[in-house]
Amino acid sequence: GNMFQVNQAHAQFSAVTGLLKDDGWIFGLIVAILVGTVIIGGIRGIARVTAVLVPFMCGTYILAALVVLFMNFGAIPHVFTRIVTEAFNPEALVTGGFIAVFIQGIKRGAFSNEAGVGSAPIAHSAVKTNHPASEGLVALLEPFFDTVVVCSLTAFVILSTGTYDNYAGQALSGNEQGISVTSEAFGSAIPWFPYILMVAVILFAFSTMISWSYYGERAISYLVGENKGVILGYRLLFCACTVIGASASLGSVITASDAMFFAMVVPNLIGLYILLPVVKKETALFM
Image (tube, rainbow, N blue to C red; front, side):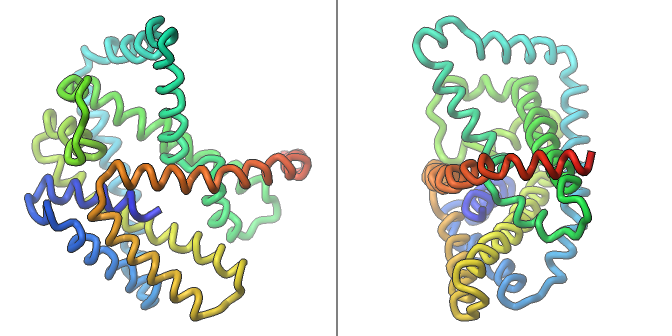
């Protein structure tokens, strides 16, 4: 929940400013200190400011994506056709490429919105409501906006601007993956937008890290109780991993994150299956 976020924030920061390209640990240390002031020092003001700015930045991102798509309106039909034809290419079906892409899509989709992972319910469970199912319906909106709206718009921007074709068939290095490709796509249509994207990514990363810190802390508290020493150790470890995430390669971070996500998904899905009767009952009472 923190290594990938800070990794991509550093990638965008160094690409736009030209600073700390080979010193990711310095960027990670700065972010770790800021995160530490919130989760260890209890300085919640930073988190509150971020909570206000993040929705604004998300709206700005969506608006920019729509502007880019409008500028490349003629390419949109080709984008849809390309997505469908390449997804169901007979050659890919025969050679097993379809399965590989399918698996990759599941991994990236789960990582994008955390659906089925069991992390978001930790935050939703803190909500006071007479009908738990109502909060469940609210939670359903998260994957929709995060993946169906934001991620799809990002894919359309990358494809419609031709940025995808600049790297098609290439083995991308760490500086040419993830946010860097997205930034190039937006920058080809809106030259100054990579700077806005840099701010947005850093804010998204910071707010996400604080959220994941809370998730882990609740899990630690459940296992060992409100042991201040253990919780402080967890917080320090969380901040240390932030530094590691900024200095590690994107491939290594994604591999580690996917492994951790899988370790979370398996027991969570078993729990969901066992609790299906309860979910059905609560939904029926609310509806």
